[in-house]
Structure formats: C-alpha cells, structure tokens
Length: 111
Image 1 (cartoon, rainbow, N blue to C red):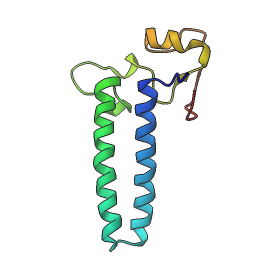
Image 2: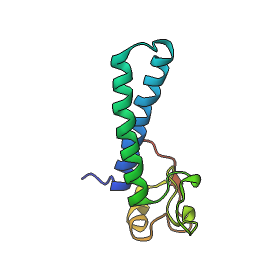
Image 3: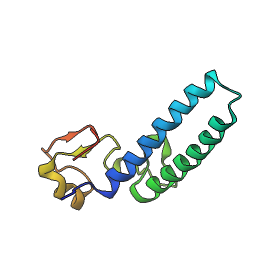
Image 4: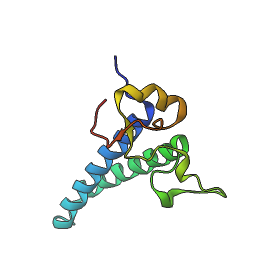
C-alpha cells in the first residue's frame, strides 16, 4: 500500500522539476547559445511555476516570504521539509502536522 500523501507527491514534483531547472541553468552557463537547452529550460520553468502555484494554493506557502493576503499563514501548515514518521502519518493527516511529542523528519523521498 502506498501511503504517500498528495502533499508529499506535490512537494516531490517541485523538487524534481527544480533539480532539472538547476541542471539546465548550469549547462546554459557554459552553453548560452544552445537553443534546444534554452527551450527545455523554458518548458521546465513553466512547469515549475505551475507546480509551485498549485502547491501553495492547496497546501500553503512553500517559503515564509510566499505568504499572501492579510493573515500570516506560514505557521498554519507543516513546513515543507517536515514529513511524519510512519507511526504518526494518520495524526498528521487529521491535524495538518505532527502531534506533540512525535518526531518530524526531513524529506528523504519516500515513506
């Protein structure tokens, strides 16, 4: 059974797309006239922007300076680097974060 949440899936897609963008930036730094690479960069940049906007719409801001509106919402959601240990996953889904006393761990790309 796959216990990966929509939150984790969306965050992983942003990370993967961001990694591809970073690699393309490094390549373009040394090959600035490569039109194919630039076109690929633009495609991935558009995808990244769309994923980022969708994530913030559905899960809250990804970074503290991503808060919009008239309320400070940064502390209302688990922070992007936090996911729960397997034993508190249900609590996290119900409460939007780890329960007191339960440990969060940095994302490691899996359950």
